[in-house]
Amino acid sequence: MFFDSELNSAHTMLSNIYNAFCETATKMWAYARCLPTQKQPSSMIVISKSKLDGQLYFCSICSQYVDSCR
Image 1 (cartoon, rainbow, N blue to C red):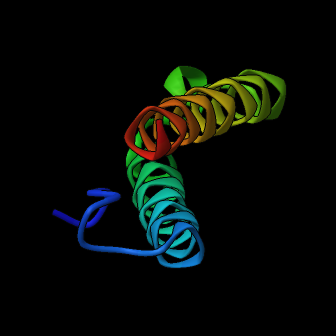
Image 2 (cartoon, one colour):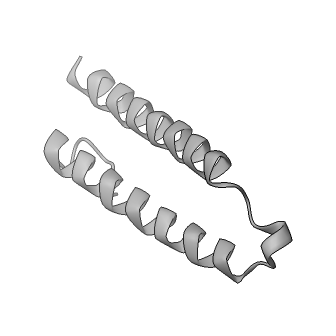
């Protein structure tokens, strides 16, 4: 529903993606901090995973929006 291009403008969809991404990243950071030090992921792994997820979300939503405009 938050990402439905028939119900929301492109700006609203991108804003929803951004907010969901921030919430997910905050939760991941909190969970990682609770792990024992030896089991915590390195910052490079977290950053690369976050970048990949952001790109996937963006591409997925953009492709849905473009398809609905045709």
